[in-house]
Image 1 (spheres, rainbow, N blue to C red):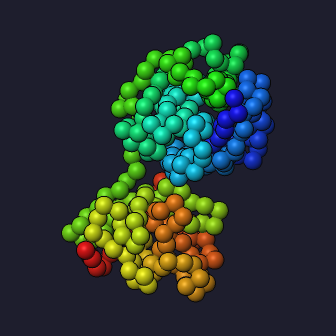
Image 2 (cartoon, rainbow, N blue to C red):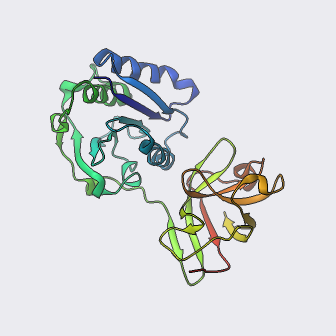
Length: 280
């Protein structure tokens, strides 16, 4: 069948031959597979980045797309490899290392299995490249057959037993402050926090961010001030600002500058923002 397989890895620029090997395995099993590269530049071993990219990307793909995530520092160990299907008919394959619980809630999962059936593996199986020898062929078989039963791949796995990699997100309404995790830093140096927005309102709170208002914040025990704005061009070049990014999360940025380098933060670091005024 002609279906999409989307790949997300931390293989980097010098690992493109690893990506090519995975694609070769997929196409040998299902020549009709349409393989899409989400990214192969996830920071090495970064579960936080992989989760963020996956959860903000998959919803834009057609139903029945299979997502293979190879950010797998535990490759070759006793960690499980998981295949799951959502109620909205998306498929995901990856290691049990904390990626999936940050992508969707357990209520969204219709099937979840521990991959064990070696009949679907590429042999011989390398202890250092499960992306090629287990995850890629599993994805290919799922796309090759209509309504492929995940139960063929292994035993049922309880979503509650998946390893969790919790993001810091703590709201203090008395002080109107929020402690959050930097989920991702893009090539412009913009830092995406774990603070979800609904318009100018911080989701599930009564905290509202006013355009052009000042927001104080702390990163690595250093204090700063920035302006909340709706678009970069409203601010002078080199201004420190907060903006709602395209994925709906609050971002810390510098207009035509690199906030990550200047403020010295990376994915996984903690940022605390303080909002002066509370609006209902």
